[in-house]
Length: 283
Image 1 (cartoon, rainbow, N blue to C red):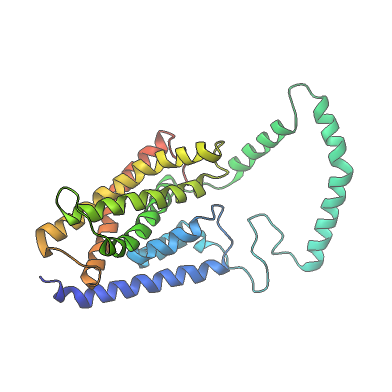
Image 2 (cartoon, rainbow, N blue to C red):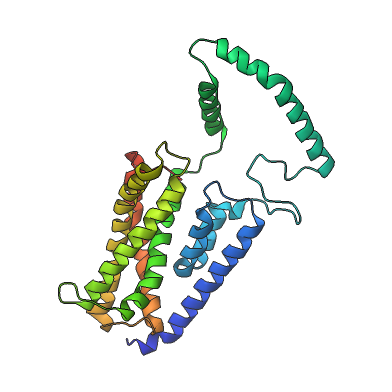
């Protein structure tokens, strides 16, 4: 097996990945927005290596399984008035506004008179009730979503790293391959922390630097587990089969697609452990 013999298959898988990525990106415009906005990036980015499997995950786990938004109706979060006729929507908003104006003052007064209770406690109890009332994903689906969330950052880093390294190569342990992998890991960590930060906003009490530190801790373990599988496959391809691969060769990107799949396999149990131990929130 040679790099040249894999070119037709490589071009096929690359084309399928790009088509699936574009499909999800366009389809998301016609679906209700996800609760975590960062997931708008996660599904199409992972489609670059997972292809139709990413579409399946988007349909089953993501917002791709929700009803399409009618043309001309603005996208709103679940529970909004997007599906109401215009007159009914105006009437509902007017009635709610009147109710808020007439009743909220009295409600606030009554709550203030109750010892140990206030608006903060009422909001907390209401949020707890909402969470219990919302349908939850099966646990395995939450872990898949969290693993793909990590994988999106790794994918973006591995798309950029080969070109950056080609422009300014360096050696690690006397090897350019290890140099490129080091750059890929650091870049993936930076992007991954950004993805984790975006996913944690509003879900945890931390903000600012504390939230960045929490995102770093979560992403370090998840991303490192992903890279174990990815580097394992690329090491096998480079040192065991083909020799050095260059990003201008289609076979390089075929190997990267397979490496991403291996990364998912090694990162899934790590994400399961992080959620079970409370280090990471289920998605």
